[in-house]
Amino acid sequence: MTFTKICVLGLGYIGLPTASTFATHGLQVVGVDVNPRVLATLRKGEIHIHEPGLREALEAALKTGNLTVNETPVEADAFIIAVPTPFYEDKFGEYDGQKYKLADMRAVTSAAEAIVPMLRKGNLVVLESTSPPRTTIDLLIPILEKSGLKAGVDFHLAYSPERVLPGQILRELIENARVIGGVTPASAAAGRDLYAIFVKGQIVLTDATTAEMVKLMENTYRDINIAIANEFARLAERFGVDAWEAIKIASLHPRVKILNPGLGVGGHCISVDPWFFVEAAPDLSTLIYAARRVNDSQPHFALELVRKAIGEFHGKKIAALGLAFKPDVDDLRESPAVKVIHLLQDEGATVKAFEPFKPDADLPGVTAVPTLEAALKDADAVVLLVNHTELCALTPERLAAMTPARILVDTVNGWAGKDWQGAGFKIFRLGVRK
Image (cartoon, rainbow, N blue to C red; front, side, top):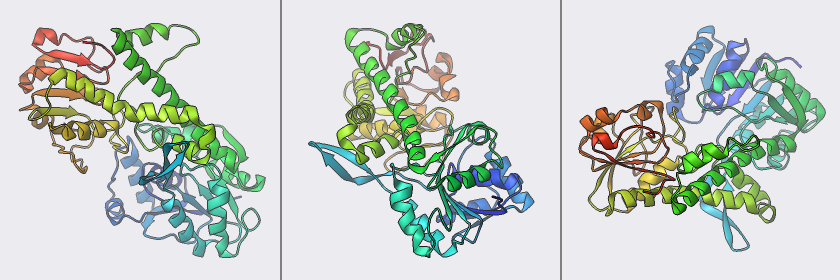
């Protein structure tokens, strides 16, 4: 199957790099987003998200004329849905007395409905948004078939999850293996023909529900492994052991590789995807549910570490360094660092936060300042929440010159191995009993 023009719905962390990559490989691409600010930014040749190389890719795509942006879909050979699938903040399921989070699929539903008037025989529709099992079959097919066309017969339909790492998206879009699940073998083959335009990695064909499950399995596996690392940190603190040293030694075993503990899990994938399994089959997802509970509660564990360091919260001024969900990116979605700040403020502390990758961060209930100096200047304590390279590189001497605070709380082991005591600091580290 050949493609000349495609339409990408959703111009966020996945949709925009995908649209730009297709455009720079010769396709006519119409990028669609419902956010007027996003469209206005892109039309000026600017980007609304931080991702290495993305600005250059966007500029190249716009310069060729292959990429345009629009409020609504247009007729095309293929449609890619890459919209958010978060969970509801105010709706929960319940099984055996335990509440679990529910997927919010409204953006996927809206995108599919927007495609219906444009759908023609021979088209391909691909869902990339991470979704609960059977979403392609049970949600998309009934909507798209309102066009009068039959999925797998009149048009192709496939699920192909994004499997990229923030900070490496443009490279991994091309180099990583691609999974394409079709509602029919012909649909999977059509998806292969589309992504083969730029994908250099292996392209694996399967059915749609298997592809959906593969994505969820990958992130759920990681979530469970992070949860055990976080439990090890809690146990190490209880027993008077340095968790980081113990993990390093245990991982010398040839069949053991323990991840590092931290504040929990954030971002749009690992902190969300396991709930899709729990929602779809709560009776079979007890381990997955337990891991989610551990990681979601880890910010509370960090709160208690800060409490040990500074005692009474009321009236204390805290400099919180880092807001992103992981190092060296600007993605604040589901960030456990933000959750820690909310908890500190709930306890009566005044918190100024600095995020080097998003100094203009605008988050409800968070006072973000544009410079490191502004966060540190009148602090009583400094809490390292994200191990950004820039923040971990701070020396005791430089920090001592920037803040009157002499209490440090390191929740990510970013300041280990430095002579903080020699510079007059008292440091508390997550996973290490003080």
